Image 1 (tube, protein in one colour):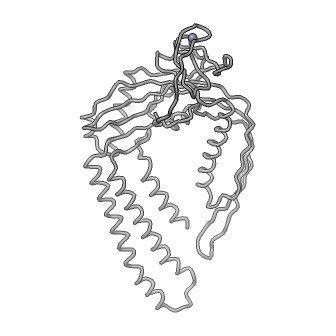
Image 2: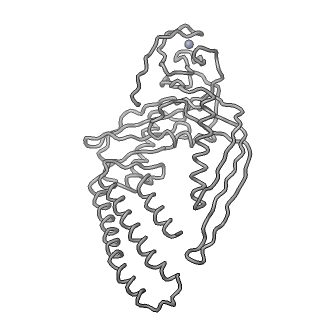
Length: 352
Ligand SMILES: [Zn+2]
């Protein structure tokens, strides 16, 4: 949890009269005894819950299974033997399910081919319909794997909130209200569309989204966190109680992994060095050739130079991951950051 200076006040439930503390940032609160949910300073509101499918024991076995699988794909399965799992912790995360009508428009350009034969293609589309967007109702949502968590809630079943359904785990209060929720829904939808659009085109020239919110339903969703220790470090795995699936996890970087990455980095560095060395000879050879050559031929040194740069960048990125203390992997055991960026650099190189 991030540091914040919030004063806690004692409060008494309007419904069951039980005393409980209320955070200074709480906008919507639930009584931990009877489940009465209300806007602070206001009245009761509609409140739903996504039931939790997991027990502490099933979380543990799912995490063990995933660790074994993810380790074999990255840092080596040897790690798993000396891991000690702590008791899984369940927390109820407050979210809003925002539904509404949207209208969107985008316009951009994609280049096909290269050199003289390159052509610009217009990509334009208009779309409209109904949308559903999940928004975290906390102001400081720095919880591990939380974005993955809400993105996988789509088809989750919802029920009317009852305190008995929470397995006595803490129910976090909301720090934003429903109007903030629709602003956030608009922003997160816009951000996601932008990422998708930029993958399809080279230049995004116009992108608009109108959202007319119809409802925003206050809902709690089950989020599990498991910590484990390996040697002297502590690492985390996040699990969704809504789907029963692993959201994201950390694995300790091992010597074996470091050596593997270091070697890969060296190979790229050498490749980059060779390409850079070839470049002057290549230019010389081209310069010697008769000048009736088409412009196309000049693409060769440009391409070699770009490849050399990409190799060099990749080598640095992989070296960076070898120096890390832990790696983050997703449900499928894929590494998150650097591998992706490198592949993207290579892909962009091909499309230039
Ligand atoms: Zn109460």
